[in-house]
Every structure is written in C-alpha cells, then in structure tokens.
Image 1 (cartoon, rainbow over the protein chains, first blue to last red):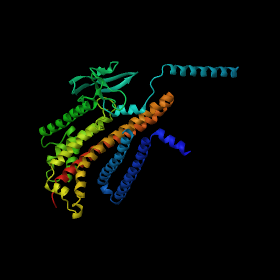
Image 2: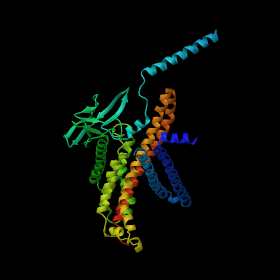
Image 3: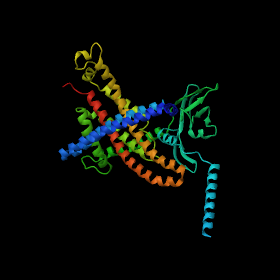
Image 4: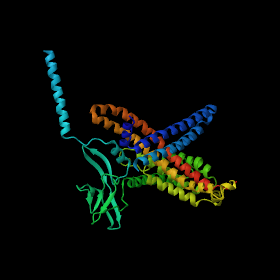
Length: 83
Length: 351
C-alpha cells in the first residue's frame, strides 16, 4: 500500500503538494489572527460603544496587516510551484 | 399501442442524442483550460483583448517597442504577430512554455535572444489612462479651490475633500508630525494612484480590467520610491539608531547583531509593502476569475449544468467583487499609512 502511495506522490509532484499544504497552513494562521483581532475589537466596542468608529478603523488596519503576512506565505507557495 | 409508441420514442431520442454526441466529436472545439484563462487575465500582454465573439477575438493591438543589441530599435504594432508564423522581422511572440508572452529575436545563426522590451503593453496603457484620469480629476478640484477661495466646497470638491482631510489629519500628521507638508503630495498621489488602479482593475471591460497593481513590477516601483524617500529624509538620529542603537553593548560588539537586523529592516519594510499590495490584488482577481471559470468547467460537461452553476457563480462573484472594492480602498490606505509611518520614523527626534 505504501509503495502505491509513493508512486502516486512521485506522479503528482512534491512541489504541488508542498505548495498546497503550505497555503492551507498559512490560511489557518491568518484565520486565527484575524479572528483574535475581531474578537478583541468586539469586546472593546462592548466596553465603550462611543469609540466604535475608532475601533473599527484600527481593526481593519490590523486585519490588513495580518492578511499581508498570510499572503507572503501564498506567494512563497506559488514560487515553490513555479520555480 | 401506448407501450409500443413509448418504446419507439425512447429509441428515437437515444439515437438522436447519439447523433448529437457524434457531431460534437467531429468538430470538437478546444476544451476550456481554467489555468490559462486565469493567467491570461492576470498577466500583461501586448494587445488589449476586449471580447471574443464566436471564436473571433476583438482586441486592441498595442505598439511594440524593442531594443536589441543586434538590430537596434524596432517599433511596430503587435497585430503583425497575428500572421500565421507569428513572427515579424525575426521577432516572435512566444506562445507556450516558460517564456510565454515574451518577444524573442531569432538571429541568423538560429540562436534566440531576448531584446529589451519597452513596449506599450496593456498595463502601461492602463497606467497612462489612470494617470490621465487622476490628473483630470485632481487638477480640476485644485483649480476649483483656487477659484472659489473661502467658499464651501461644491461638486467633486466635496467628494474628495473628506478623503484628503482624512489623509492629512489621520495619516500624515500623526505619523510624520512636524513638517508633514513636504510629504503630503507624495502620500496623496500614492493613495489615489493605488486606489484608482485597484478599482479600475475590478472593471471587466475596457478601459478597466488591466491588472495594474497586481503586477509586481508596478508595486516594486512604488516601494522603491518609498525606500528612496525614506533614505533621503533620514536624519542623524535615524542613522545613529541603526548603526549604534541604544542597546546593551554585547548586542553591538564584536558581532553587530542589532545593526545588521536594522539594516535588513530598511530593505524588508518596502519589500513587504510591495508584496502585500501585489498579493492582495492578484489573489482577489484570481478568486473572482476562478468563480467565473466554474461556469465554463461545468458547461463543458453539460450546457444545462453550466447555466445552473452560473446563477450561484454570479452571486459569489458579486460578493467577492464587493469585498474586493473594500480591499482596494483598504490596501491603498494601508500602503499610504505605512509609508507615512516610515517617513515619520526616519525623521523622529531624540526624546
């Protein structure tokens, strides 16, 4: 059974598998990060509803930065696919 | 008899579908390749493809300007590549393989050589169009301000004024502090350029639809300009903090750990800006195009499934495009904010 698995791996290409798994793990990181940002922002708004506008803008900025880091991983995965 | 008639109808329809399938086999069109479709729409090209009407491509051919060390400057229109052998004066447009889309020159001894390509490609033309749009809008607004001094804003002014005030009061002043006026022109240009190009990239038809900010060369240039402005506006304190920071002595000497880290940071910060913008915009386009591809993939199996999936697909694409509109604005804002922060850090005074 393992030999057939190895044959399949050889055929599919380790680069493709590595790239796909890498992209999946990167998305886990982004999801956890942005989820934390969102949850803290909700807590902060519930504590002080008047500051919700400020909190919302800062939350969006922080989410964009975290997403940027996740996109790094996607770019590296694409490089692994094509280089 | 009813059973007999039903049997006859069944045989008739089976035969009919067999004939239809056989006809499909006899003149089979090229099957739909989603990878090629997506990459065609993401990458640059030497003509602006507008639509395909019944296998006939409607596109705008763009000028090709090449400099080759063997034959000097050449300039011609890219529709010359549409002849059957796809070559013109020894220049060939590569159709497949890793150099796809590039122009190579075949020399007399058979070897190939890639000349320097200064053509007006789709992205270059799109940058020219969006820059023209920027100049028209922003200069007309500034002229209106000059003519209507001390009067309330009217028309286009009232749309752009909150944005410009926001960039001045929430981005430039807190980040740069004293002397922020010198950097305002660059920050405003950066913001509006990135925003306009992001939004134009979301439009599916000419004059939009060229993936400008998703082209890593464009974001590279923006990051390089930020890098040089940061470099040239660094004050004494900034350079001291990099080469001789306020850290325990064993981090600086004999192995300069922190200075090396700080030097790398000077380069990685603009690099991160470049990759963030490129990856966000390109990923958004790939997702929207991928949902469109679903329609064609399913349509290849059976046309009816294609029609069915198209409803779901269009809903998803609308949702993703709304998200992409938000991302267009946010990425422009984040790029500008981080640039302003880097300028501020370069000019920070010792406290």
